Image (tube, rainbow, N blue to C red; front, side):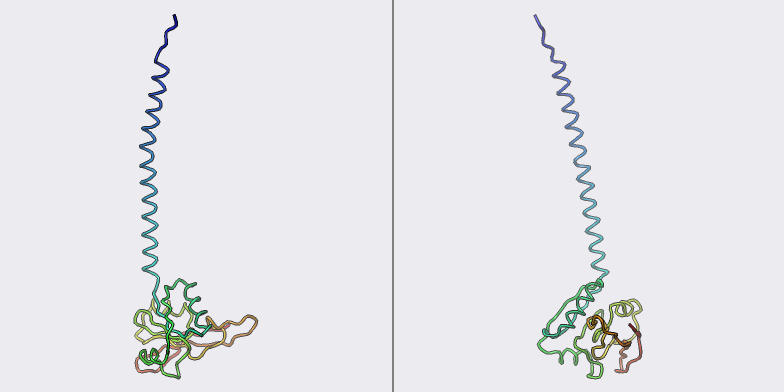
Length: 177
């Protein structure tokens, strides 16, 4: 008579129980690790968003170069609130932009006004240095400034101006091609 011993079956059950126990302990550790990585990533994204300057751009719907300037700012990491206005004159008047300093779009950032195709690097410098001025202006639409680039055309040098509280201006940043 052949005896059937339950030892191999018992060993299999014990092995399976050990594996399942190990798996249930490893899964929470893996889940905890994944959750921690996700939380860290969310914190980094939130910190980056807080560090990204928010700029409100007022522009006319039909101006193509304004849209290109907005894209320049976005590419440079700015959070842009792009506002299409029915009329730009009231915006410029409210922000103290006189016709001699005017361009096609006007922006506001952290209490400063930015008029025209001012490069993002100048805006970052403005925010970093926080000078006691009203803002930056680049009158007209200088060829070669952000949003006004034309491939194959030699652009002339242009100067971004600091706009002071009394309406006067002084050179802020010179740019050459």
